[in-house]
Length: 349
Image (cartoon, rainbow, N blue to C red):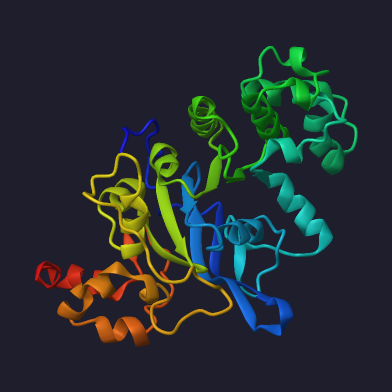
């Protein structure tokens, strides 16, 4: 794994009051064709502290984008609550509008989110006009947001259109559109997934600089553990609607406790594992959550017999380890991880 380009925020961000938090959040939908209930997000606790970057990682379909939309107020939770600076989010139109000034989305695909008919100036000013109407200092605010996003001199970009920009420049315009409202937190959904490898580092460096200069908090949704390593202070790993492991990024990614996290790490190009862990079984279906640990049908620790040797195999198939409570330390929702943490010799038999 490569050397990190960022560093943790100063002070105990994980114990400071959260800027953005989920408390027991669940999101459920009716399955198509009357096939039961989709448990897209299932009793999740998550927090983003002041000036903190948290990476939310997992496979496609694990629920991370639904959780992000819920934290943005775009989905209403079926259970639990979203909190902003300790206060529950209200869902009346006025409350949501005020909230969205303070917590902004940075979408995945700038090509799809930017209207090709709108100039860069209009794209960045749109949020201001929605929330504040026409302001006398609108041009100054747009100029400042573009400059902060690394598009300098900003006036040079005012009258340009998305098709005239590179992928990296379009992503910076999207970031400027979030910054123009001077939010306290952003939720970035796969912010570099659509960019060339040569540009990804520049955008990640920009997010780190914005955190340092503005004290901006961020939740970064990604399937890329390498990105999490390079940008995040803490990481939360999701599987089938639940956070199954969470903690400081260095601890989670260098000493993972959950078999799912270890499997994800084993396939990275510079992974230390001798051979990648290939997960078997059917891909997870949030409308058919298995009994016991939801990962047990695909768990390599259970399949190898290590869970039986540690005396927990029966619990893996029958007993749900439960949701992972939010805590500043490193935790994993796994029977095998729990018993080997208490009795290290159990994991070495």
